[in-house]
Length: 325
Length: 274
Image 1 (cartoon, rainbow over the protein chains, first blue to last red):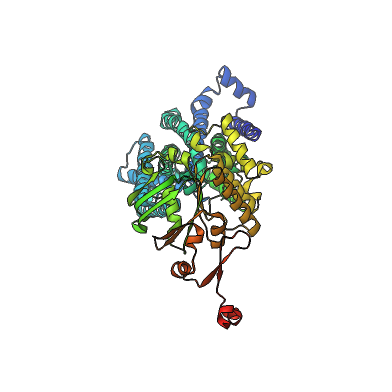
Image 2: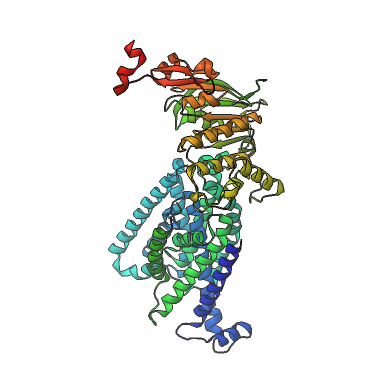
């Protein structure tokens, strides 16, 4: 218990630190006292940049990161495989393909439409995966392999479309790498309701996912309805990832790395993993977005590049150091 | 001993994805004793165990319990309150502590969040003491030896407090001393009135510890009864394709199966000389 509290407190402090840095740094840098004043009483110079530009971006990044991390935790709990992440559910690939197809087919498509297209694409491809794997659901590894094959198929389709339409690829590319750029309060309703509903669902599933980690036979003999838990957890994960991807694009590695880090910190029980995972996911995406903005100003890198640059090596380190599968 | 049946299996056909392993099996297993399922590899021992634990759903036929209720009519939770299973090679999530694993045995009695009440803690404590792993309860499972780990799994099953305990080759991977420790525990459980049904590979251990043997071959019941009755040279030849003689175990008087000499000892064998 102390380990959970210490981890959570440390992570919360880290998140606040990055949040303050995130709010303060940028083309116009705001000093810490001014940040405080803007937050409490308002500040004529910074009100717009703080309330309408950086704060929504910070909130969106936190929620999307948290959602992706939680989604990854659920997927790994079901698949019992370290390579599992929301990506293998075809969510990212399906969402990306849907966005690319829409951008190409409808040149004047309003930007506000993109999240909905992505959400629909993500859900549709996850549905396709679950349908294809319906007879293999008791064998989670098959599910993962079918997902990987689907992801490859989507990636090929995207490459094909971008190659034959080279002129329109720019905005698609930014979206595909994942970015929090230009996100504002209007994106919040796309994310918050899902989290509000699915977080309790994840907490409800937590203990049964613990039992699932003992293997199907043991879990069944302990009275777990393995099939139902698996479907419920996968659906929760799919919707969480689709919602996050619909707002932020294809952010890689958060859903893969955050659950591993969380296990490293607080062990294998899902009730404890959930809060730690949420915080870790938020920290990862907020810090990635921060570095994406401040590394090479005035150029804004897509946050997805940063998460992959930091996430991938860290993931390799984690896997070689710690084997828990 | 009154022979109340623990399981009444009628016309059971069950297998994997349409391939039946057990074919129209009729079998009644008594409660309150140790029953060993024996037979050559692939004979359907584990399949039968999984059907009794409701891990496999019968293609036809059914299984009823002592009170006459059909196994398939119980909820998953009710089943788990009455029947516990130790699979052959359960997964061990790394980092999991002994106490936490044993606590999972309580899950059929807990709410959806797994909250442990006082009587759950008592059951866990008793199980830890009974299997002699109390001193290990704070250690991660990964740090234990094979023998200790198997005792911890037994503790989980005991914490479940089910009347029927199903074990799938519980002595595999254990060294000889630990095998006998485990089997002693199994016998004690039956003495307490629990029903133990276990798959065993070692025929001599089966004879020594089981009250009743159930012999399966290719999904069919070949024989059933007390070890003295079932363990014959003819049965070994027919079911196991093994030439062996049956002696009396000098320790227990139960049948002791000694395979006939072959290979380099062929000429020393008494029956070859004679």
